[in-house]
Length: 329
Image (cartoon, rainbow, N blue to C red; front, side, top):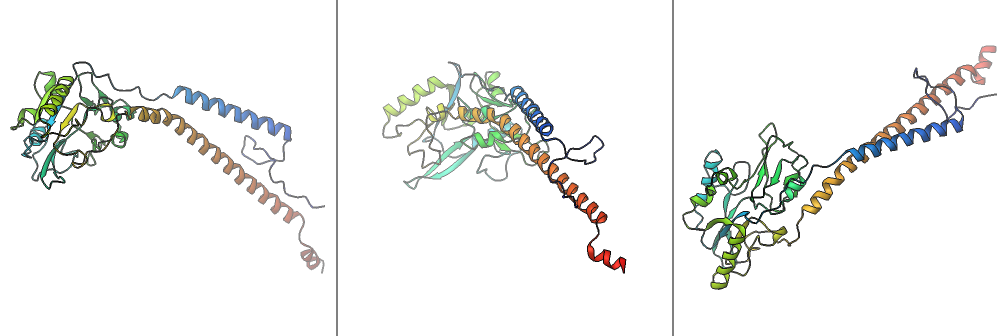
């Protein structure tokens, strides 16, 4: 009587040989035991994995800021050149037209609906609740109580989460750096610590850049709008956007025409922190699923190999009837 190959019920000995079927109750017990151990290990892993603590300090009452009056900007680029000199960066052969690892600040040229040239200074906005710092898993970016959002390259792992989180597209990745660091305006925090103004403010010949306490700059901006309604639109960009920024702008045309993103007053740090808190759990889940799939595929391969061996053994033990007749003749 021929013996049918056994498809699923088998176990593996310590030596690695596939052997005969096992008792279903024993197999079920071992299976449940293994799943329970895996679940316990997964829970322990998730309880131990914690995201990096939020790397921001609440902006103090004396937090500094910058008021940028775009109606006074002549596009001379003195601020951008001063920024390069202060950060020991080579002077450009051509005027920069975007933020990158070689230009932490630049003056953008925009044509408004009035067909006039408008000049817009671009740099890090130094948000009061910076999404970049919330998204950073290692605390390389942090908001200081004094106002600047500063960067610690010794902590950076080059993940670029800050790039994706920033609503203004500020952090620039150094593609030619083997360590994969980022660059951004740091509000000349070294100069501020020594009681000096930011380099760009000191270099501006037109009084378009004003440095001081943010709350005082806001009061001054509101007074300017009230006294010169024909000169300014009634909007201080950065007062409320994404919870407020240290960089404040005055303009004579809508900020949308000048390429500023239209953002609400709600901060996005909560969303960034939620994503980062979920990251360890998602990673652990993916790893667990991948491990489970690997074990399932491995077991299936063992089953197929076992069935192949059984079929080969049966073929050798019971030759076909045609072969027996030939041998008898």
